[in-house]
Image (cartoon, rainbow, N blue to C red; front, side):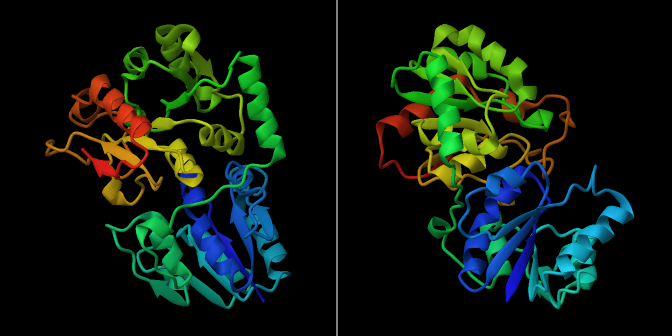
Length: 337
């Protein structure tokens, strides 16, 4: 007996699927279908028997790639598939692979091909929603995701910090990027001036320009790690920091998995969509008085009203004070502002 989880959404979704993987693995062996970008996040995960990469935009694109993967999956004779990504393509993949039990959300595009449909609650954290696909319900304190950096990731972080001349000073991480433009808080350089500590900037290579602006403000206190570490190594780096300041983006979920205290800045989106921080200690900042907020589930590339007040009105002092509270008070309860 074995099961398959199909999760081909964003990086953060893959991180938030790890509680489901752990739960299903208590009953059967678990394989996971993921994108090439997400696959490294599941390395060393003890709940996962095999990571199966579905490169739906390149190597496996089109009908030929779909059929090839379905045949491969059929050979594994899975008893059940959990559709953590709810597209019709994912549902059709499980059906074509001959998997008899197909479980997904009742709101998903592929729901007609499911054998069991699970309610989708809008106000529930997505990690908890995904966990319910496996028939389990947990309190928020019990749904924190988990990642497992190994020796390779630890060595990469050691090398990065050594090359930067780091000598065990306390670190605060900044993650200024997002693929959605309106989710990028624009005042990280000003925040860097206010934070009287060594800083490390994490993100993809595409975030290097943002990192350069921060580095110009912070000077030698800043370590630019953008584009230099894998996702799992970035998680390892976060585990060594005292706090993270991040937008509503993948680093938020990496920090949740590593238990890193988190200041999460939400603009066009809100945590109530189900993607807020799960770190044991966190603060969520957002402008709660705007009638236009939230305006989008992901965050548009431009503010629909042109003012972008949801981000511009969050001040560097607000964020710096939140960081200071997290760093100074290890027993600080979670909060939203």
